[in-house]
Length: 225
Ligand code: 5GP
Ligand code: ZN
Image: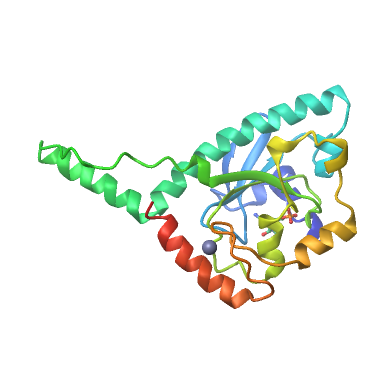
């Protein structure tokens, strides 16, 4: 079923178009989300069959020693994937390119202007985490930029699944008892609840179109800072 759609990336990589896997280590593969919900949206999948069919909670919130080691491994590899995502983001965002061009022009003309802004570090704009209730069964960690600037972002669930507590930072694992496993009623209420701007917190309620328009305004400002 579609819920196993991520498995072939691990089990049958030769069936994929070249370049599909953007990075591979001994333990994980890194791919692009087919329906990116932000400017940069990657998925990191563990290759170990002992883990790849587990839910995030089974994999990351178990007391077992091997799960704790696995969680640490995934955090480390996700941090390095986030570096890659940050440099991709910086290439995509025009202000930075403009800065680079100015730097290069300056170097060419051997006259370095003093007031050139420093290159922006986009790592703080990259988020690493999982969904409380993933739609795809193969264990995956989202590595996603915060902008939510994407034509594939088409409805409320898309937005709220990344911008409420339905999205759980990998860093938050292992979860405290009281934060453990949002029940399905809580999950549903987060997904169906109000949509709030990731940047300024403005509440758009159910008004998706207005949120989308606002996200584009925020995007223009965010990329300029
Ligand atoms: P989940 O809600 O399960 O955490 O997120 C699953 C993600 O997988 C979604 O962001 C969705 O866009 C992405 N996705 C769904 N099918 C495919 C696919 O066949 N290939 C890739 N690369 N991503 C997919
Ligand atoms: Zn806003």
